[in-house]
Length: 439
Image (cartoon, rainbow, N blue to C red; front, side):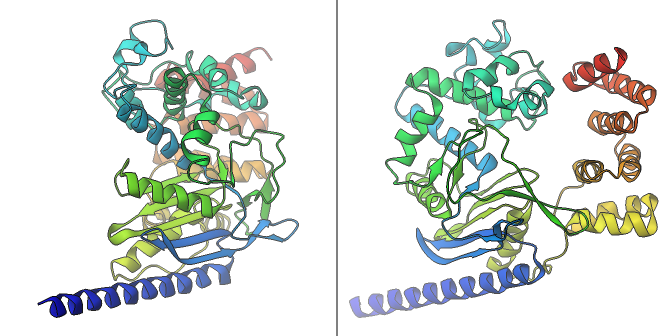
């Protein structure tokens, strides 16, 4: 009987090794396709049970100066940062220092009214508290260097109106995770960055992880990169301050250490977590059977697109070949066939890329055009977005900004008023309307 069991275990081990080698080989094949068409820049790592099976770098850390990415290059992990914040909350609950059902007012007085007692820690984690998003607040974007501590962020968050009654909806909120950071600071009596070091960086040996501030010069750091709609690439100067909601810089090796910690402690369940901005994208994908795919990229969307294809490999399914970005596709259709044709194809194009059909895609494309001086094309795109998604205040806000940049202040004023009719507490529309009416 022992010999039979030993034989079975040996066969299972051989099967596991065979699968691991197969997945690593297919991932290598996939990444070679991306590299060939220049659609990926960053580092990819596949691990099983904490052991790296495949690790390789692609592209450039600095595309303008052609400095190659290495497996030691540091990347902005964006909202993957939120995993650290949530993990700290879970640790503190296990330590008996808080409970997720506790209300906000037990720890900090953010609003100094009944809202502090309606919002729970669990709501903040699940983004059901109704908080807005400081990254959309003009006061933040116009004074980036002012925000260095959690309290600096709270100063503007406390004045942002709730988007809905706590617990009655769900809306992505960076502000909510900053508030979680404030709770962590209150409970521990230590700044958020110090908690990061003491609870993760030091005990896990994460020597290549940084809570980087504007002005910090850290050797081996990648530059966030835009791939323009016409295929050219340009670097984005580092100008976002980190917070408990996002912005840590780290290497792929350190991300693996954190991934192993999450698996061993089971603080969070298996799943796929992504972080991204217009110039960064990161993925921590934890699958069954001990597999993890970790990706750090200085291209937007690149990590998520690779993960989507690799998840199909794990299921034994075929995947769509790597393709040019949606912006490049949008630009080709817009310039060759016009806005109406772009509008007729938009939904299918987005869904073919396994993305949700929503106004974000055209909005980002419009801003890319506007940022490159193509204001008339940008107006066509923003106008199209208002026809496709007329119930979203943000699309009208963007159209107003485009008219303002074109010099048509009268049209911009009427559109900002429309935004306020739809969303009376919209802080950007209020600010811009006040600014325009003073002229």
